[in-house]
Each structure stands twice: as C-alpha cells, then as structure tokens.
Amino acid sequence: MSEPSADFFISYTGADQQWAEWIAWQLEQADFQVVIQAWDFRPGNNFVVEMNRAASAARRTILVVSAAALASDFVRSEWAAAFAQDPTGIDRKLIPVRVEACDIEGLLGPVVYVDLVGKDGDESVRALISGVEPGRSKPSTAPDFPGTSASRSSAPRTSPAPGLAWAPASGLSAIRLSDLDPYVSRGHLSVVEVHLVPVTPQLIPVGKLATLGDQLAEVGRAGGMFAATSALELVNEPEHVAVRVRERRDDDAGLVVARSGQRGAWLALPRDGLGSVLDAPDLVARLAGALRVLAKIDLPQPDRYAPTTGVGPLMMLTLGDSSMVGKRNSASMRVAGPAEIITPLEDSFAASSLPSSASEIAAELVARLTTRL
Image (cartoon, rainbow, N blue to C red; front, side, top):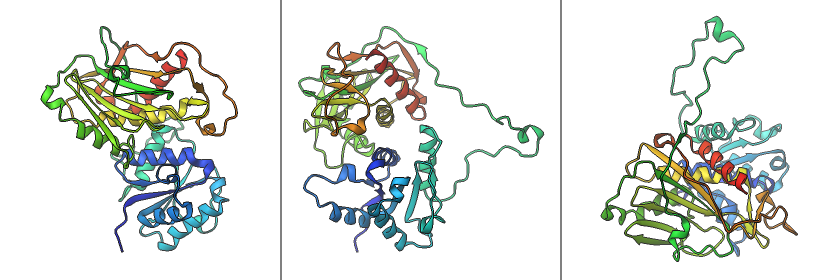
C-alpha cells in the first residue's frame, strides 16, 4: 500500500466552500499538504472517483461542520469512511472543524472538534493550527495565578495586545505590476497587487538577486499562491526578479523582489463572464496569505516596510460577494473611474511584525482600496 500523499483531505458541502478554502489556505500556509475539491478536482475528472482517491490518499480528514454539512449524504459518507478507520480516535483520522453554531450528535458527538464559532480571523488561525498539530495544547506562557481576588473578578486579567504601530513615510517609490510588462499581461482580469517597500533601501547584489527565482517558486507553492501543477515563468532582470503563473488564466498570480529590497505579490480576483468581483472579506484573507508568503522570502529584513496596494483594470470590476461568481445574471455596483487604483506609500510598520500581523495589515490595505473605489 502506497504512503499517503497529503496531510489532510477537506470534506465539506457546497454551502461551506469559502470556509473550506480558508481552512485549506491556512493549513498550506503552515506547511501542511492539503487536498480540496475546489482546487484539485479539474474539468474532466470523475467526481466520485476523485473524492474516493483524495480521501484514501490523505493521512487525515478535516470535516467542515455546519448544519448543511451534517445534513449532506455526500459529506456523511466522507467522514464515515475516516471514522471507520479510527473509531476510537487514537490516530485522530477525523478532525471536525465547526464553523457555525449547530448540534453535533450521533457518532460525531463524542469526537472533539476545533471550534471557530465566534472567533476572529487570527484566533481562528491559532485554533485551527493548534487543533491539527500533534502533541498537547500546552500554552507557551504560564497561566495566570487563579488565587487572587483580581483574577476571580469579571474584569480581564491581561490587557489586549497593542495594535500595529504605523509611522509616516515619504519619498519612496515602488516597482509595480505595470513595470513588469510585457511579462505580465492582465487582459480583462482584475488583479490586486501588494508591495512592501523598505523605508531604508537595502541593495541586493545582482548576483544574489539572480538566484532568487527557485526560492520564490518554492515559497509561492508552499504558501498556496501557486498550485502544485502550475507551470511558472521566471523573469530575471538586473533590477528585479519575478515568478508568475505561466498561463493567462483566472488564477494568475506572481511574486517579485526588487534590488532595492522591495517584495511584492499579485493575484487575480474571482471572475466570471460579467467580470471580476472584489469581495473585501475574501480579499483580506487572500492578501494576508500573500503577505505571509512575502515574509518567508529568505532575505535580510529592513527595520520598516511601507506598504502599497492596487487593483486594476476597473472596467469589469464589481464590488460584492465572491460566492456569487458564476451565478450572476447581471452585474451590479460596477466600478467606474480610472483604469486602476494605487494606494500611496505614506506610512510604514515594523518589518518584524509582518508574520504575526499579516491579517491586520491586509485588512487596512483592503480598506484603503475599497474607500478609493
């Protein structure tokens, strides 16, 4: 019998696809290998055959739990197969992840689940990764002493972590997606780009820059920006190196590093025949993932980064819910205005805070984009 080829198979119903993709993305950001229908089943595949193969090839099954999932016969057959392999739960073959308030009864009732209900994005990431990792869930810091009157009160025992500290920045410039032409051709796709510009440039030697292509491809695949099967194109210039998906498809994405130390990424927005859709909550999650990928590029970090983001072209761009892509009959809230929107390089944050504050940074950048739209 062959060894499992993936760490997790994600079992979900269609109503929970956004949750399933979010979970899959976070797991791949944490260097787990994931099989998920939305990404891995391609046109022409037999759905039932691929589902059986995926479930058999993965070491464990993650069940996205909602009322709709619990009522789905297909989902029931998938988690039942994992449950049958490990009915006592010793090997944790089945890990339920509850994404909405619902009662879990029957055979699933005794199985301890990861609960994301009521948690924000960062809390949900921590709960998910802690829930799937091996070993105990022992905290990294000592628990508060429970014996004082203050600790028994209803008031919080600790102050919340301070927010990300922003500081003004000026006189900076960035290589943008348009500067990579003709290597990048967006056509009718609306693409979001994000760049991190060092407040104090740190020149990368040209020889070092030329060797970064393989690393960009590796971190991009590991972080979920590039699919494992995507053919990649390398652009190697004296002042920058970039790696992007070779095919001009809906999943257009890329990474760039400039000689000045700037790091950048771009990704296509969801689209259908009516154009692209900018779904702010969905974009925050995707942009946070891209920022975490940029943080993993093995180069010296500056003290501070000034971020900038942009979106374009705007002609076929709609603000709305990305779950409606492919189901729309007409466009609404069509954005009118310039060909693209670029946010200015006006402030900065500590580079060391990037991995832990990626979601907060992404939320701020998306807010800057949407207010300009």
